[in-house]
Image (cartoon, rainbow, N blue to C red):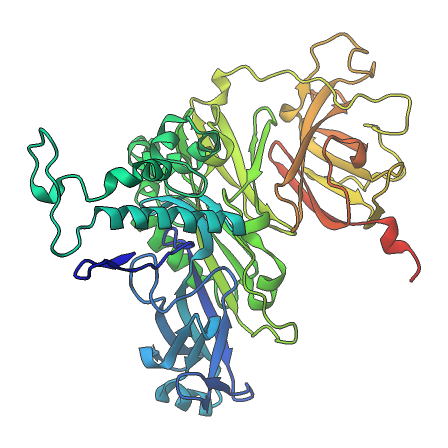
Length: 578
């Protein structure tokens, strides 16, 4: 809002910003690499309309601006070209084009003269750069640069505009037109510039109606800190790592000197955000050319028990074609398994669901090349405090999974008493569940591992079954002996129980589905390994997703991960003849 106090009556110009963008951390970036060959069609460079050798990189993760909202620097950085078997060099700023208004979420690169010489010599020239992006637009409230609430509801935006206009009117009322003076307030010792404004008493009731918590959701920062607002309860976990980061970071370094396997950082170095960001950028760049698609994850090797912060850092690498098919940040699940007990924690990996990226024309082919996004997570903020022992953490997103990182939470689990388990669901008179081998059980491997067998197409309708068969060989120490008389768990011969947590990811699920099944084990537990079998009706498990969708089923237990088993759920309407 801007008003001109040199006029009488006052001249008011109102500019209401009812949305905002979330630049987040430096992790809101994408490293890209695209090849250019002589056979590659030329592009039209928007800056001058010329047909040139170059590439167009679509960025679907978020909005790209010429000026990055993170720090005010360039939105596209470190642009360079590399000729395989030849030279390399920087790409000048005037050879890079970004315009959010006219060419939304696309970055254009024009090859400089030296790169054209390499191209003419028959070499493949790669264009590489780092692109910063931000999420949005959103309607919501922020505490400095930390977004607390995000919504895109139209009525919420209208409410925010009305609210901001109230602030505008308040500022107008406190302004003094030319030739007027502020009346002195009885008993006031303040200067004339800070006394009560003209005509304020005639509008006091209206002003009171605007003196409310700022923002369409009416959430104040003090409510978040005190936990008074119902929305503040779940927001506290999301902002705690940001608000208490420096305090929690100082409690690390318990296993100094032992490097982590991926980023090459000591545990204490994970508290240095700049060091982590630099290591992630270097890793992302190294994965662009020739590396397979997937998620690379890293974490400190050890943290204190019940720590307030457990950092995870990684890179999601994929091709431009895969980028359109896998909404990584909207469907990634973080899974942590306590190796000593088999207990599992599962949550959406990213606290806020990112809006869908810009839709590209259906006839526009994805370019050749790859992209890699660095990311950082706080496992404690997502999963809650972790008990002592060894935790195996990994990310799964549809059909993709990260490497498993193992974090020792001190004190060791040997100082704790492992919980005893009862078989669930309990076998009954029906066909399912069953923990005995059957003709449909997958072949058993000689090594440790689990195998899953699931129907590829399943009818989602009342009265139908969705049958999962699984078999595996697990280490005997991971099986919990049953401490009850035979028959209590529904089977007189069960010797032990093995917790197996199933996780389902889907592109259109708001949260990953999870359920822990405690399977009966019938073998003596004195050998090094034990065989386990499961036959389950997944539709009988609580909350299993229904409706038309494609599901990716993963299984987790102590020291093991299996999957994904891919299944398409169809409805009767989809099968009806046209």
